[in-house]
Length: 213
Image (spheres, helix red, strand yellow):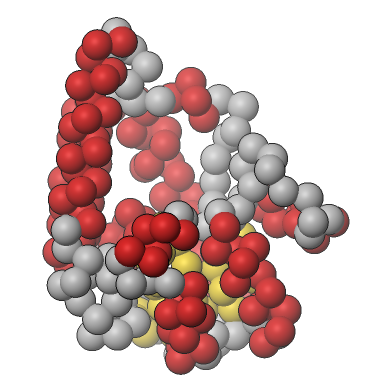
C-alpha cells in the first residue's frame, strides 16, 4: 500500500520561528515519516533551474526558502526522490490578483480584511501537535478562500481551483510511479485541506494528515 503524508509549512522563517514550525522541527518530521519521495510546492521549471545551477537565486518563481535551506539538501543527503508538483503561469499570475478590479481605497480595505483572515488562521497554531496542521486551521482557511471567491470568482478559479487540480494530479502521477512507497507532500499550510480532500477518496493508499495527532 502507498502511504501519502501531508505536511503544511509556512514560507517565512520569522513566522516559522514564531509559531514553532522551525526548519529543525520540519526536518524532524520528515525523518520521522521516512519518505521515499517528497512532492514539493515547487514549479517544474524552477526544479530544472535548481538542478542546472543550485546557486542561482532571486528569480521570479524560485522555490520558497525551506526548499533551499532544508528540503533540497536533505533529499540529496537521504536519497529521497524529489517531485515538483506546483503549478503557476508566471507571465499572467499578477493579472489574476483577486483585488485588481477594485480601486485603491477598496484594495486597502480588502488587504486589511485579508490580513485579519491570516491572523485568524495563525491563532489556531497551538491547537495541534504540528502547528498549522489541524482541522481548526483548515476550517478557517476554507472560509478565507470562500471569501476570496466571492470577491473575485475568476481569480479564485485560476489561482486556487485550477492550481489544486494540477497539483493533486501531479501527486497522483507520483503515486502511480512509486506505488507501494512512502510519499510526503510538503506544501504551504493553506493547501493542506485541498490536498487532503483531493486524495482522501483514492483507493489503496494510506493518507496521513496531520503527521502527528
